[in-house]
Image (cartoon, rainbow, N blue to C red; front, side, top):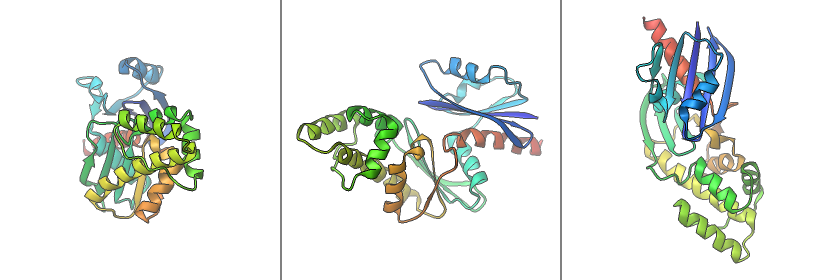
Length: 252
């Protein structure tokens, strides 16, 4: 039995392929204005028995034979619980949204909160701020990680924050310290969401922003708890899709 999990996010599309109980393929592609084209490219040449989709673009597979769709909350709960069975709190920072999810001892969702439609504090926000400071994304995280202090950033609205960053630079502020301030503002926003669901160990950080070393380190300092991340934090939603399909197979 070959199961495919597909997480169609706003910035990237993630794919995992399982043959029985073994992952045989995974891929992450940048998204475009044409979700359908990217998913077709990802699936080209992959024969499967069942496909499960989640994410913004999951409804591309509405009414498609041998396909099912699930919410991102369910997908991430299943995916994280399989990697970290003792997880009770999930933070997912993706391209356009941030989700905080509370799990029970069996890995079932108890409570969750999401950011509003504003992209503040998300992967897209980081991309724009990195560009304003003339850093690549990898350089941006490392610069913030190495900075000894932070320039305070007061605005989280992307437009106003960008203007604030440019103003700070024009006054001679250190780039790395501005980068640190941006990262601290992102963590502050995420932490307020985590507080709404209650911080319980283990805490697992997933999504593309989990690759950023500064966000993870600052988050640990603010939470005063160890933060766990899977080897590839981007594919957890797609993994959860496969696990959902398996659970349905066992029930039928």
